[in-house]
Amino acid sequence: MYKVVVSDLDGTLLNNHHQISPHTRRTLHALTARGIRFVVATGRHHIDVQSIRDALGLDIYLITANGAVVHDPQDHCIYNQTIPAALAQELVEVERHPDIALHVYQGDEWLVEAESPELLAYHKDSGFSYRVKDLVACDKQQINKIFFVGEHEDLLELEHRLLSYYGDRLSIAFSTPTCLETMQKGVNKGNAVKAVLEQNGYHLADAIAFGDGMNDREMLTMVGRGVVMGNAHSRLKDALPDHPRALTNDEDGVADYLLQLFGKSA
Image (cartoon, rainbow, N blue to C red; front, side, top):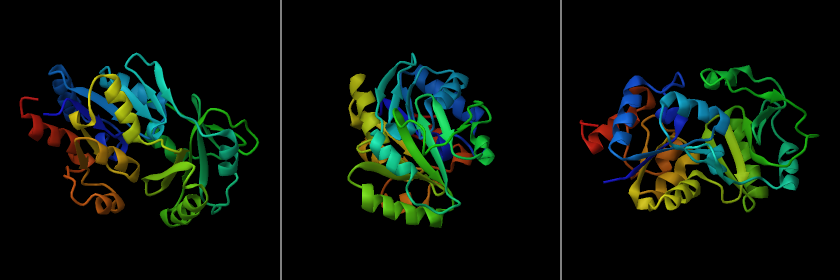
């Protein structure tokens, strides 16, 4: 039986209102009370996720920025991978469709080049927000993630160019169909999960993980069992056709799967 549960947040553990349902919360508390460890692995910023963790009321590891940053249950940063400054400068200046918005995670901040109020719905419970800044002129030290938000078709063209130019120097993945993310080469949720498990005396085979986006692919293929959400993007379903499926995030898919796996007593 698995000793560790790892879950993405948006589209996975969180419902479409960007919240953890009472049923899912009860299930996670019951499992951790039985000694099963729980880890969050998300593309979100660590400050944003810390508030979600506090509301959940569990002492858990937080893998954030798609694996670039890891905090232990005491909020000590134990892993921090940044994009080299020169490469980050190239990324913020890369040619892109005018409707694609540029975002940066730098240290404790979420920086944007223009107002993006529609994205604040994802963070209404945590209150985490961005700061508008000239991203071309600003300092490029300590950047964990640069991401692009826009229409999927426009992002597909950008993904193709980024992979052609930077595929050997960056990790590039869609977290949602409208969000294309770039991190330092080798940064992904799977490698971060491996580091957390090893630090706590576990193996990848000891973990079960849940995800819905292409940024979850490495994690889902590396752990003992990787479960694809019913609402996952078709690209992930096509990439992992033989992986087990859960119900959708709005149907408490993670909790339902865990209850079936560990027994209704959870």
